[in-house]
Length: 114
Image (cartoon, rainbow, N blue to C red; front, side, top):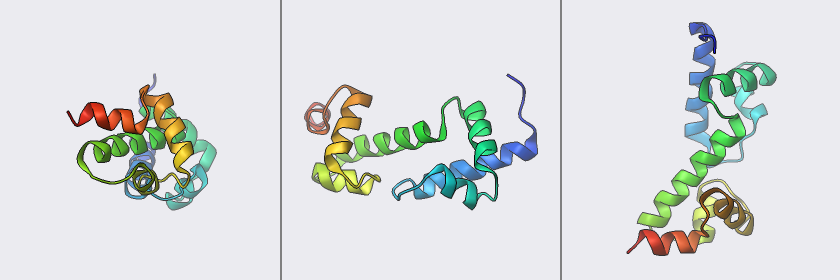
């Protein structure tokens, strides 16, 4: 794939920084593009090219990774963790977590905390 010009690369860096700081909240491509003062279609295309995954998938991966960390280290309920990593519905979180990892959050915790 073609190298991304430095100027455009900064947009991806800004988007990544915004996501990393705000993934616990309700964020969408719209809010990210707005925060980075850029067009969402342009950002979406650029981001996917630079990161190899879509904005949505990147956010999801980030949330799952943080959920795993909390399931391993913290004595919080699944509902608390779901809310903390940006899911307002814990049953939806459980479905997504299982689809992404092959395990339910509780099964993951059991396996992680041996």
